[in-house]
Length: 468
Image (cartoon, rainbow, N blue to C red):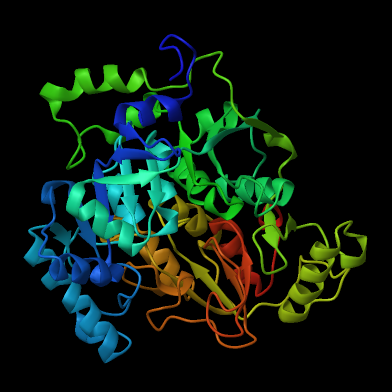
């Protein structure tokens, strides 16, 4: 055990507060404050029932269906298949059986789990949060330890409110200065992953720091932490500050006014000490980051929108060369092709990366008074985001531009609910993954920010948003 007065990182402080015991071989038994569950959880519930167990702390478990839910209609009958309808109904039944608070399809609190949790005040600084979805890391933006787990681990958490976890190494990513015009948190992450690689943060938890991060809204920080997974980090975190406290205050499950001052006093203590040592340090200059776009089938295959498709023969590593050649074959792109002007078939704005109200505002600002040239859909991250966008007139801007305005869910990011990109079609997407077949068999995905996606919709091709 480190000397108690030795400087500690935010990760160490929150971890130490939750560590029940440490196994001689290394892993910690961690107390879990929140278990978020979605409709893929039927395995975990079947496991509990088979063993005659019930959720131990149902009040600390929150259920929300998102991956398979229809975005055209709000009942399980609208689902893409009878099997999916059954899965959604089973989820509701399991929530009732376990006495778990959950937000069903008809609930005004429904949405993508990683959008709903912060917006409902379920995610708070200093908590440990798990969900059987890798992008749980999104929630670290509020100064929490939040990570994805498998369904057998989920059964363990449901039954015990604890989990065995190996403490990750620490990496601090400092983004200095300010971002240029048209550059967003999404571009920061694509630039970071292009720099360190899709395996670049393997075994580490990332703490995002620096002026750019401090200046960012919670919504921008959620995007950073969301895509920490695409750099292979175990999770991402941002230290809680005044921005965090202002965001959390007054939300459904946040501390009430009587508890507020004590909560904030505790949260202020969680930040990394000034001389805390990180296992790795990475620094980016905000001013050097352009609007980014991916060309390949890994999030690290990202360049400036003003750039060109690279030539695999220039890569120094044989594996990277081979991967790039395969990527370009799948994407049907030739080395040296300019990315700006590349023709597209579809645009998707949504996902736990970029479907919050600020993302929709950024896209709507570009679309106002213009028309989409290609098929475009927008899927708000939650029913609350949808209602807010409708109240602000944003939905009307999307509709007038020719976008389909959908109900909330994971939709065309996970492509499990019937919303897919067709074989061979090219899609500019605000989601986080561009793997082979991610948006549907044979689909070709170019990852971009919401503003870049809007620019792509009105031009029908990849376009530098700064020119629009």
